[in-house]
Image (cartoon, rainbow, N blue to C red; front, side):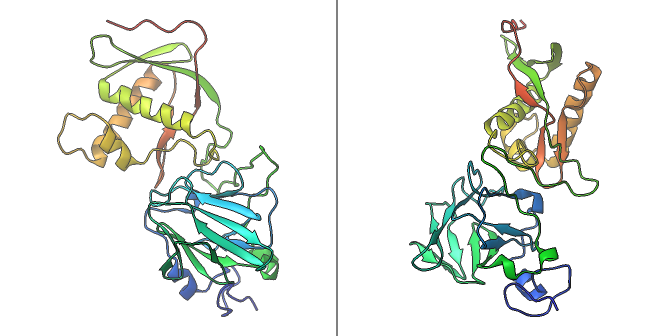
Length: 296
């Protein structure tokens, strides 16, 4: 008989959490499993269980945050700070101690927001921002076939999670030379991709620029989630001709940029994924040769 990893109640053979415990950490509607990715070089027996019942084993020192460069759990949620909290094994207490790293939205154990290092007990509910987990001290006790794949990696050799059937995660992003050039007198400009120039309007050019910047700034992120910009952020940042832009305006803008890129022979470089937003299908690299001249 399979038991819930938290309360010990019988559960369906395909789950590690009973419905009651899972309900306590039910995710926000905008959060999906792909937004939680773990990197572990030397996993301990302890772990955090996410809202979908996936087991993320932790190292003796593990950082949780939106941008994690070493051992840690990356949570792609606006409620989570870049470096949100740290889990560190205390051999004296023989458990993990959780410490908030000055996060914006706080770290909660049970129903209490912590303001000092806090020793965790098996089954503790831990919340980073609005994203909840359960702490388990011994994953060995979990039924082997129930333990979801965690990411155990060698240093500097992160292995991305296997994509779900039918899901395009674009693992193994190719690189391509891309340059953005604005018109000297305003009014848009062009993007140069692999030597091909594509004329774009100001809003189209800014969309491409934002996607380039995000992909370049998130070089440390796992490829399945690298470079995405949520639609709400794009709507807020892009220049619009309407005072009240909506998601439909953004979709139309993306469609026009895609059409222009395809027409120029570049191909569809903009990838969209539900709940994550938009990103480039390539990693931008500086074009070879001198900078292109600005169009007049």
